[in-house]
Amino acid sequence: MSRIGKQPVEIPSGVDVSVGEDSVVSVEGPRGTLTQRVHADMRVTVENGSVKVERPSEEGFHRSLHGLTRTLIANMVEGVTNGFEKRLAIVGVGYRAAMKGRDLEIAAGFSHPVIVVCPEGIDFETPTPTSIVVRGNDKQMVGEIAAKIRKVRKPEPYKGKGIRYENEYVRKKAGKAAKGAA
Image: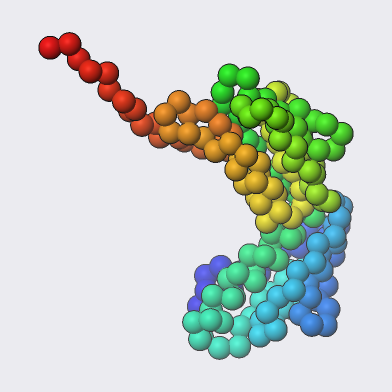
């Protein structure tokens, strides 16, 4: 049995979870509302202040869906209560980020600034010119937007310049060795 899937998801106070027709789970909380369509084979029930996910059989496909469904619901509950955030660091001389309205303007060594448009449900923040914070309720969207920002200028392995996650380790290569005088 799935060790993750069999654990119930506790619903904190102020959060309302409902399961509609067509297996659509809706979670409403202080930070907003999230909806997710789960697989039709998974049975989601809300009882006694918790959400429970059950699977119809021990088939491999159903076992994998069991843990996934439970984790998606748990992430929705976490998102509407606390939200999610990803922090990025910019390393390199002249590399910086600034807010331009709701959008993010990144100077990363190109001849032009790169504009990252802020989608609905996501907030950008630049506490310093070399750091970016991406916040939102949907964990998948926060991670996707952070990856998109990182993709503007990935950390290169020789000097370590580029945009990286805050605690990401970039292993550096030695580079060319100078020819020694013999």
